Image 1 (cartoon, rainbow, N blue to C red):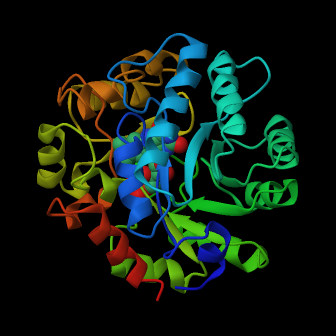
Image 2: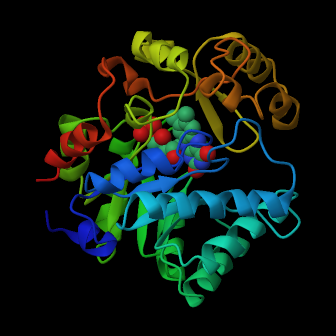
Image 3: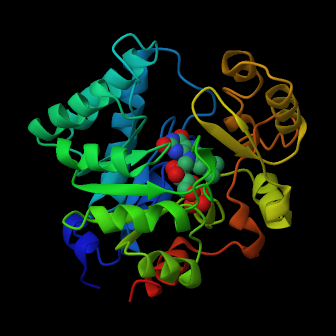
Length: 326
Ligand SMILES: Cc1cc2nc3c(=O)[nH]c(=O)nc-3n(C[C@H](O)[C@H](O)[C@H](O)COP(=O)(O)O)c2cc1C
């Protein structure tokens, strides 16, 4: 398949497996790369509890990059969750990861953030250092996409409210935001994200001007995904209407209505601050996804989940979505 995204990525298909903390390690990313898509290593790859040491965080990423390179010779990406400003306490971890991905000359960097002057300068600096930045704004607007493009991003990932994980602070679905972006940004590849799980949904994104898809939830149900079997079964049993959205420390979070989801939702509705809500879900994703604690862990997925009813090889998922762009 030949379009703006496959040309940029050097892949057979314009399908990118989205970064998801804990479960997007070398095994899944390599399966996606070998199937013709772009696999992306997420944060905390191959670990069961988050690493507290910044240097070791970077070295964990290096180990995973090496592992991936043993499993595939295809291009791949890694997730760079950018600090929001110079004094962000997460900066020491992000800097450690950045040092590693620059040293390792990782082909694509999926930079996820909330646009401001610091982020714009970071895109410029990474681009100047030779990195290929695919930029994903959490609370996506036309302005933030334009700013990222002007700063040097090689492609823009437009995420609508349909997605899993952190979602926009604005009530804009992919149907709302994607056509606005593709109207304005016509000379840079636009990749759609949020609720894309198969040919049909990919076709809708293509109709709105996207040349590729960045997909998370559907790859949770790949054979090669290391998520706990009970977590996978929960996803298979879940329906879109199980999803709720509440304010998180950054933007909003979509989860199911387990113990963690109910508490965070109630706190949000009761007017709690983002800072007050944070401890009730932060650091609890691995608990659900890796350890299978489906009540005390944080369970996030796209409401498109209702249409996913089987676990299948990553290759099948990649090809299914790719058909939508044919
Ligand atoms: C279980 C889960 C974990 C996620 N973790 C991360 C993460 O660590 N970093 C990140 O940038 N995005 C994360 N996301 C968001 C995805 O990268 C992606 O934007 C989203 O999954 C796209 O929507 P979809 O799930 O409908 O495909 C996560 C999403 C899910 C479902």
